[in-house]
Image: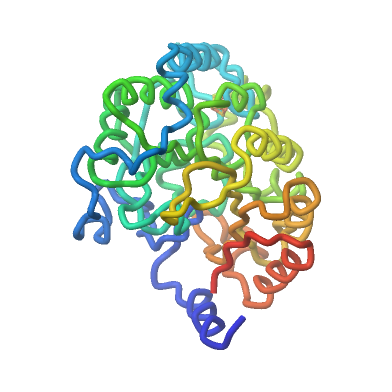
Length: 378
Ligand code: SF4
């Protein structure tokens, strides 16, 4: 790391003036993404004309399946997986269509926290017009340190219809965003596919970015084949024990009020094993992520790994697994912005930001492992 970069890195580590979005690295209020677009999104919009599709000749993967009717059918198939719900690896088995809530705290009713152009995501997703992020409320993984806990764990957001979601996608395209970036999508994957089908009929032509914690059900993932253009998964942990410890933050009063679900839902101990399988499947579907000539990403797998204090994430093992099992030019964003939030202070070992040394040793491990397409902060 060059001296200037080092200084910038230290500033990033020490300055806790505002928390950073774990998912994206952008500074947000502790409350997570605001209901209104952030200040930077309100400034002058990019050159794209209102309503203009992205520059030719790009065609999103889902368009073909929309035209054949398959996109809607897959959305309907996933909808049925909410009764009993097995959309994510918790496999709670609750009937969400009857208004029941599983570990994620979501019923079949769609709840969305915000949608806006986002300028803090990876550069090839942001371009000049921003990434068109849609933040979904609730989450099936539920990390104790989640910086967006008010959205993911406390369910902040507004009830929306599938038609509303389709309108949001089209709004983001009109604003000049370069993609539709669905954040924490898994428990609402049926809604997303159905909305995408409506929006595609009305002219949506942006690539779909599936921005997930990585812990995915393989059958659901296979339903997304030919629909998702860019997978943006985390790979958070090498150890199931750590995943179970830090990513099982049950809703309040969960065991007392939903003893049946508490008994049947699965532990996140399977996180490393299932996420590895998910990454291989994502790579099979979309391949290596390489920016196009215009600098934007249109297709591929972009992995995020958040370095955590005291090596609890098992970063070296994560990186080495990626290097051994995926092409060496796989895009890997090694993220330095861990910030203790929410219940992280109940765990002394993760109640601080990371040190420069902790970050640099992961970067060194990635280089030693031969990874060549690294997104390094600092
Ligand atoms: S936690 Fe997963 S399996 Fe359980 S209800 Fe939510 S989406 Fe369904």
